[in-house]
Amino acid sequence: HPHRTACSLPRQSPSGSSKFKPYIVRVNTDGLNARKGAGVEYDIECVLNKGVAITIKKEKKAKDGGTWCKALSGYWCNKKYLDFVRYK
Image (cartoon, rainbow, N blue to C red):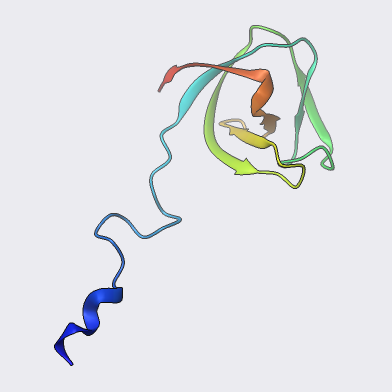
């Protein structure tokens, strides 16, 4: 049957590989725990102070329902403590 192609994916990139646009944020709280993974269950890697600018390269929904952002340096921070500055 010639109409079998209806199930093909949309012409944009396949889901999952859509290009994430890196952006710059500023930490809006003092003593923000930057963690090894997306969620408070992960170990703290370092502590960021208010006003520090970091570049975000990835986002992920955590078990707690919050959104966590992965910095270029490799650690993760909760998005609610980050203020968007601009796209990279």
